[in-house]
Amino acid sequence: MLSRILSSIDPELILEDIHAFTNCVMARSLRTGMAMLVRNEVGNCGPARHLSYMGDMIGKPVLNVVPALFASGQDIKVTAGMAILSGAVPLPQNLREGNAETPFEEMTHNMVTCFIGHFPMAERWRSEGRPVHIVELRPGEGDIHWNDSREVLSRAELVFITGLTLINGTFEEVIRRTPQAKQRVLMGPTVPPSEVFLDYGIDLVGSTVVCDEKAAVRYYQHGGAGIKDAPAGALKTVNISRR
Image (cartoon, rainbow, N blue to C red; front, side, top):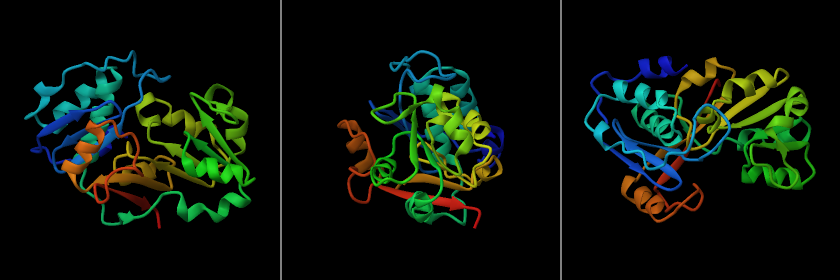
């Protein structure tokens, strides 16, 4: 999957800049991309080493930098690799502005729905009595721990998957655990806006495009953590679907 995404990137493209904040990493090449940083997650990212220096990668080809970052086994470097991918892949023609959950809202009244990750919309729909379950590595009240999720995921018809599964190494396992899924949505600011995911069990890709780098950098530099509270015009949610 990674090799296919990399194959869409211009071989001459270089990494122009990189910013590592408390809650995310931003990187500029073709345009500015971003990915959220969550440390000490279960998966293949190893220990949290958030002070790792990456400035020496600036000016180098993206196609050399990204594989090295992913191979590092360090959570912040894997996150940086995802941010670089998000800013380096060409935007697909069928990219549309909009929230990834909205097209499926009516379905959640009757379909067994699972969110991998704690999204605000999931909390709201669950509180309304819809058959919505939230699976988390760090579960809150009413959530299901990832280690105990096999049964509910095996029944899930509609699955929303956080992009952090691409970083902590659980993406493929989520696909395996949801054989009954009629629709799978991969979403969040960590997801590169690539059509490649549609060939790996995903029906809709929800991503975030950085529209105003200066405003976005200032927001995350000052401790910003989400998308909805970002300055107006700084970020835009987009999606890619089969139809």
